[in-house]
Image 1: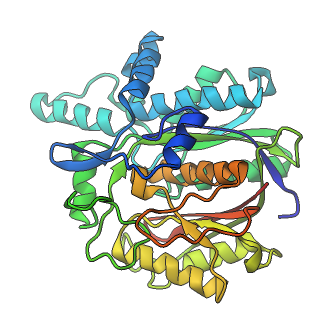
Image 2 (image 1 turned 180 degrees about the vertical axis):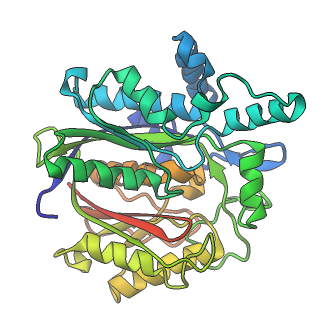
Length: 380
C-alpha cells in the first residue's frame, strides 16, 4: 500500500464479551464458549451482553422489530464511533455486511407464511440485506454513504477493503466498516449440517479443532457476534494500529463451496497483502481455519507455499468462539490488534506453542464460499 490507513477504534460483541478488558481476559485463558442448543453446539453471547441488547431493543419503538444481526451492529457501532471521537457531522461512510442476514426474523416470518399463507407487513423491510447499514446510519445520524453486501465468510474484510477504497479515492475521510451475524437458528445450523462440516460431538475438551491438521472429523461450530472498525486516512496520532497491506483474490468455481487443495486464492491474497514486505517480517498469521478438514489444510498449504521455510506463528479464535461467518474476519482483526497492543501471543492450548520473538506485523485471513479470499496486513 502506498498510503497506510489508520484504525482509530474497534468495538465488538461476541461470546468473548463487549468490553476490551473482558475480551482480552477471555483470550488469555484456555476456556471455550460452546454450549448446546437443541442438541447442537453453538457459541452465543453471554446472558449479561444479551440483556444489553434487549435494553437497546426496547429503547426505541422502531428497534423492537429488528433482527439481532442489526441490533448487534448498532451496539458495536455506537461504541466504535464513541471510541474514535467521531461526530455525526463528520459524515463518515458506513459499510457493514452479513453472510446470512436477518436469520431469526426470516425464519419466523416464513414459518408464519407457511401456517397462514400470508406474509407479515414488515417482512420485507426487516429482512433485506441493506437493513444493517441503513439502521446503523439512522442510529448514528451520519449523512455519509452507506453500503451493504454479502460475500459469505469474507464479508467483513471486504467491507474493510471498500472503506479503504473510498478513503483513498478522496470521496470520504472516514469510514465505519464491519460485519454482523446472528446465525444461531435451526435452519441456518441445518444448512451447515447439510454440507457435513458441522461438529457432531462435544466429547473433546475442545469441540472445535481449528488449525489441528490431525483431526478426523469436521468440527465447525457457529457463533454469533459483530465487530466494527473506524478507518481514517494516513497515520493518525490516535491510531491503535495501521493497515500496511491489503490483498484479495477469487478462485474459479468448481462447485458452490469450493476451495482448491492449495487455496490459490489465499496464496494470491497473501502475496498481494505482503507487497514489498518480506515474508520473514510477518510475525503472526490469524488464520481463517473454520475447523474443517479440507478448509484448514488448504489454508496451511497456501501459507507454506508463500512463507516457505519460515512460517509465522499461527493462531485463531474459532476454537473459542466458533465461526461467526460474515463477522469473523473483523473479530480476527480485533484479535490481532489486541496482540499488537499487549505484545502477547494468543496460543492454542491443544497445539504446540509457536510464540514469536516479537510482535510487530500480523497478517489476518478470511475466505468465503467460492474462494473469495482477503488478507490484511496490520502493524503497530
